[in-house]
Amino acid sequence: MNSGSRSTPDPPVRVPRARARDIVQLAEQAGDILARAREAALAPGTRKTLRKFNLKEVAGLVGVSAKTITRAVQRNELPPGERVRGNRLLFTLREIHEIQERLNLRPWRDSAIDRPVVVAIANFKGGVGKTSAAIHLGQHFALRGYRVLMIDLDAQASLTTLFGLLPDSEVATEQTALPYLEGETDTLATAIQPTYWHGLDLIAANLALYGAEFSLANRQKSEPNFRFYQALRAGIATVSDRYDVIVIDTPPALSYVTTNALYAADGIIVPVPPAMMDFASASLFFSLLGDIQKVIDENEGGEKVFDFLGLLISKYEPGNFVHQTIHDWVRAAFQQRVLFHTMGTSTVLRMGPEIQTAYEVGAYQGDRRTLARALEYLEGVNGEIERLVRAQWPSKSAPRVTVKPSPEPLAAAGNSAPAEVFA
Picture 1 (cartoon, rainbow, N blue to C red):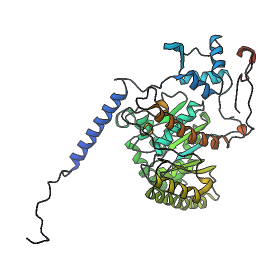
Picture 2: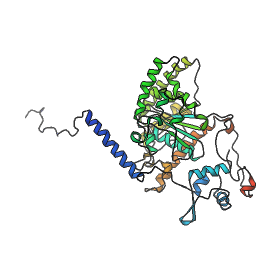
Picture 3: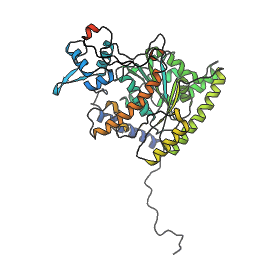
């Protein structure tokens, strides 16, 4: 037998050919799977709801001792919450915000001297943890009582889906940024919808958002003095007075829409997993962003200065030698540009068929330590970004102050905070 000949034929090919109608069928099948996943996470015909928070969680979020809250509830000075088995108290996020309001602890910016801060989560590469970072950041701010707007600019609409909406059937084009980017409306206000997170609004996305690429290009050619990269920034200005923080989830590509998001941003967070391909992608991101910004600065006749531009090491495994090595390289190369905290890999952060973020998980089926680790990562990263945001507000620049608990009833304390309040 010839040594170059094959002794056995190749196995049959498993993957079939595809025509347009086959691709349409794939889309329909994928939609069915998403619908079943949503039904598994939600009762039929209902929307997602946010879990309630126990007394310890509320005390931590508000910055007031659990005893102070309990006594105030007993005196009917705070929302009563819900009594459950074991005489435990549970509170909704709306009630937590009301507690903050009554104790004069809402962390809102001072509208007279502080401007809203727009944060873009961006990377030209997919799969780096961008949407996970964005949604957890927005929810972190909402948990702490800030007024938050999240803008989904990715036509794949992963962020929108995580809020319990099916982009293809439950998001109208008018609920996306597309009409504004096309010039059909003069405000983004009509696209905003509230979510089941009190204090957190959403501008959703769907596949129609791909049309913004063509619309922005056409407007650049046909409208005098129109500069495509300014559109989103102008749109945000029509609604920003309502919010403290605006978080943008960007498409994983260099595009007209992504350029809009970056130009609209005051700060940029770039998630970078500790892998060489992802590090190379981040290098390309900075190179292209620098080139784009130079051209924009020339057009604008001045330099745009971002309040912060930081790298977030995402999907990090502390025990992985390769991750540790690249982590050290990134820190050595970019130094203070790299967030001090990393975002670790966790089963909780993978957000499976239950369509829950780590902040939404109540009764966790696995090891509670896994959830605790995930929340520890999140609080480290998001708390660091929160400090970056607050640093832009003159009203929050006062030194940190600790106030001792007051023995007086809340009614006698007026608007002053009765316990352990941090400026």
